[in-house]
Image 1 (cartoon, rainbow, N blue to C red):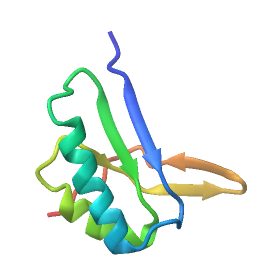
Image 2: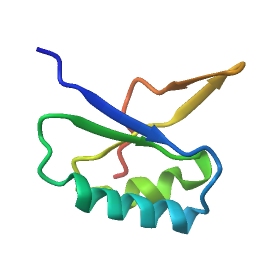
Image 3: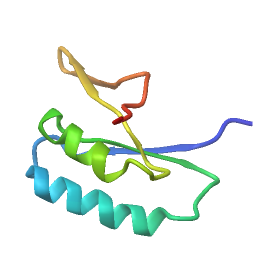
Image 4: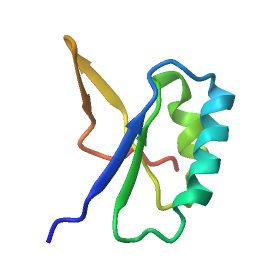
Length: 81
């Protein structure tokens, strides 16, 4: 059976600091929800900071890719090393 995915993005509506604050709070809310995969796709400007904040988290971080007017998530999760 496929595992459901909950994914969210917020375009450019947050500063880098607001994006980090958001995912830190989100992490505390979704802790222990192992039956779904949670993924965020922040704006490129916040990608590195969000990935660092979620480094040891169950929340995945993906890059948004825009092709014309269509937004797609990258097929591979971004991992900060």
